[in-house]
Length: 350
Image (cartoon, rainbow, N blue to C red; front, side, top):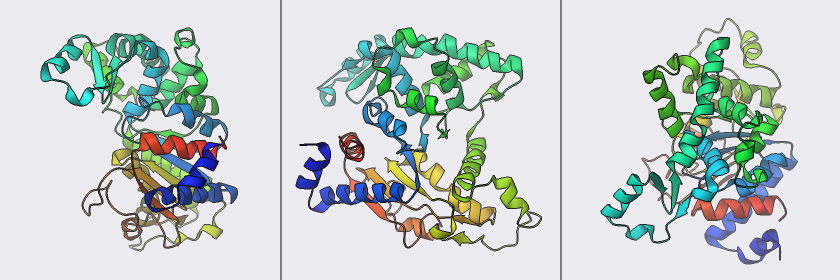
């Protein structure tokens, strides 16, 4: 029995039935010519989501990704240091002394999985420093994901791959030049490494890495190009002198757009909240027309809570100008490390 058949046979009610509904909605969105943004919070790369996500990218079932800095780098760490990771099945029962021992051995724990500092972080630090300095020499600045794309596509670390490269979602993204947006990259190991090298004087200046506000600008342009078929500067030029009028831009209906974009959110936090805000930014702050997100699904084990972002029900997003009355909305209350691979497997026909 395939994954798809298993799910359809057994997932009939309650939270499980929502999985089927969300899969069907995802497929209908793509069949109608829509595009899909996937957002990655948590430690999904260390959970090896690339085993399914990479193929989703290759088969054009994912068209853009927003992720935390940790998910960006941890896919590469897994690629070059997988054989040296340690799994701790009894992670809930570790004593403080055992945690301290892990620190002493340079084993950074993420739930049940320890990432080896020397084999992972330090294994790519030299190459990253070289890329940052090369950019400085050319007078260039790049986004965090662009430096990682350069690292992977250069082939310099290919001989050190310890997993099948087809299971790296970031490599699949790099090979397709997939749009990737990484808000808050400074909250990551390589972000810390970058700052340390600037302080030490091994990298000339802090401005070599483009940041979150520039990512939002790039995201707005990508969203308008994707949905309306033209760059955002052209759209703005066609709407007067750009001065605020005090009225919202028209949030256009899906059938008025060239295509629409869906939103598949894994977890919450900045990986989800940052990109979903681009729509109200365009039609409320820029006062330009743009379509709402045309599909929304969140996998989260956050308890429903009015006051938290991750626990807010999707309908709350209507008042913020992110989703419309007609937007298909799904919340799957479960562990994304269990649900996301099943959904991706079904969507891939496995």
